[in-house]
Image 1 (cartoon, rainbow, N blue to C red):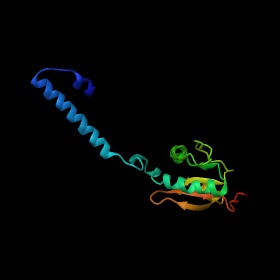
Image 2: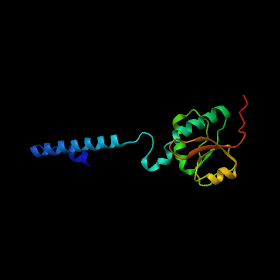
Image 3: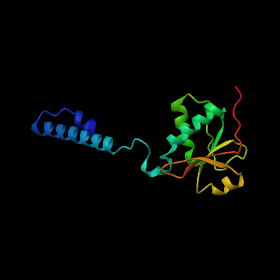
Image 4: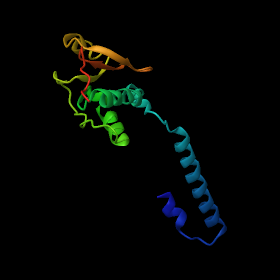
Length: 148
């Protein structure tokens, strides 16, 4: 709307002043938004801050152990799918959205506190912990190496 108002040609001193004011305000707003951006995660979704590192660790399981299906807590699903699409090098199937964790997966991305009962009940081994969040990668004991 400000751009439309600034584009209206008004041949007067006030017209030029309002044009420069609109352009200046637009530039200031743009700079404010650019310098307010986070490059790693949204402030409201702090729990996703370590998902890039989690995905990097998962990629190792995909390449070394031929794991192509990973179950995850719903809070990590969207970010994991983003990194899966961004990378394009792993053969993961899409991370399914859901609130109920399947019991037949070999590898899980879980929240250490919220999913503690599931980890204990399934006798999973935590092999990766997030640096600044409670994200963990938990695997079934004796995760088999793929045959080459």
